[in-house]
Length: 197
Image 1: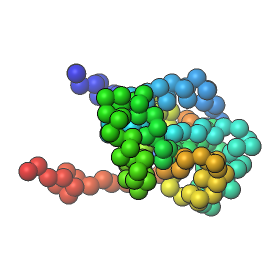
Image 2: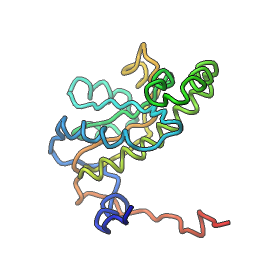
Image 3: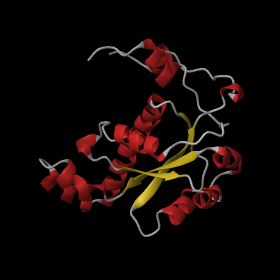
């Protein structure tokens, strides 16, 4: 592989920002499908790919979601063209015969017999996929506003009742108002956060 252009690195990482204020510009369903079709290629352990995504666009669904959000996240969620609920499937292993055919005969019983192990794997790998989700959205020219301020039980009861899906985090999507960004916060240096041994 070759190194990607500096402009692409800037779009994905160094110039990208978390947005809270959104332009009144819609995001097409085709773009959301393209977004998922990028995310699905990111690596997960044993190709488990447990992430599940609900793109909340309709006024009715958005109003239901607003009831689940912490007060500080209500206005930004209301104004975002799309809000993605990034979830995970506790029974992801049921898809392993398709996704990991060479090892499904061992892995399916391992996870199905140990719900705690399955839940830990689902949460970890869906978190990886959530990171891919943000990068893929940025690659498609979208801005992101990931959030943790919500009532998880209420989200699960409202959107996932009767299923094995559980919310991981929530991410607003659209085209952010760059003129209303907060000053950028610092990051830890390599020497503060990393070691080479």
